[in-house]
Amino acid sequence: MNYRHAFHAGGFTDVVKHAVLARILVYLTRKQAPLRFIDTHAGAGRYDLASAEARRSPEWRDGVARVLKSAPPAPVAALLAPYLSAVGPHDADGVPLSYPGSPAIAQALLRPQDRLALCEAHPEERQKLVAALGRDARLNIVGTDGYVALNAYVPPKERRGLVLLDPPFEAPDELDRERDALTRAIRKWPTGIYMAWRPIRDAAVDARFLNALAATGTPNMARIEIDVGPGPVGAHGQQPLARAGLLIVNPPHTLFDEARVLLPWLARRLARAGRGGYVCEWLNAPR
Image (cartoon, rainbow, N blue to C red; front, top):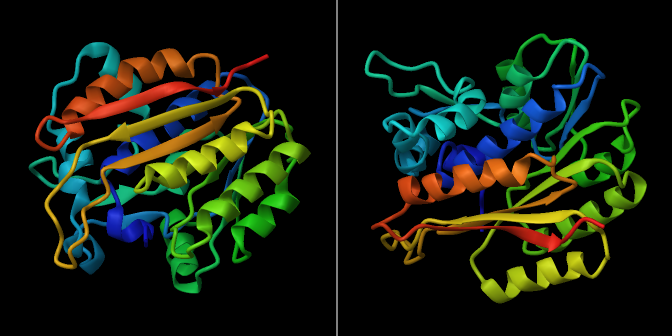
């Protein structure tokens, strides 16, 4: 598997991931106290939708483009507004020319008193990240392995904030590394909010991942997933990804109600051949 951001920018997984990310950041910024956003695999920050990577796998056409072309009901539109405000610029027909990665969305939604700690080990991606986000005193961009850096970053001095684990899944043991890094970080900073993204291709493999995390006994762990149904087989005989999920530790108390408004609409809008579905439930409930 390879889920490097440039090949999948703006696809259905990004829409759900970034809509949820924006809702959490909106919640956190309601309090005046500063916060820290930590991204373990930041990518290039912003993605040109006319690039070779985007043309090779134009998932944004069945992802964010479908959302932008729609007229969602008012409650859904209000919840999507912070996320969609970061998308663009657009051409004269309203088609996005670029798509923001998680760092760009966080940069757009966070305040002067907040800080962003971004990790990107790939040198070329890191250079693009620096160029995309520009000069911003709130940023700290490092080339360290994100899992190693996370252990040093938590707990942040602000004692409040959000950690995003969104690796490219290039390594065969990536899911195990993500699980171990998340478990270590929670031990050091149990009150932090964590979002861990993963593709779901094998239900049994994913169940082992979830069961291992549930067995840690960490309370307040939620599952948010989307399934857009099967798509056409690609040139190499592989089915496109149909299902992906977020594991969220310590979600804001508003998130479940918001997700239960957003997810049914997104699942219908992003579905292939009308076969969309979603999950929004506790893995380990709050105590």
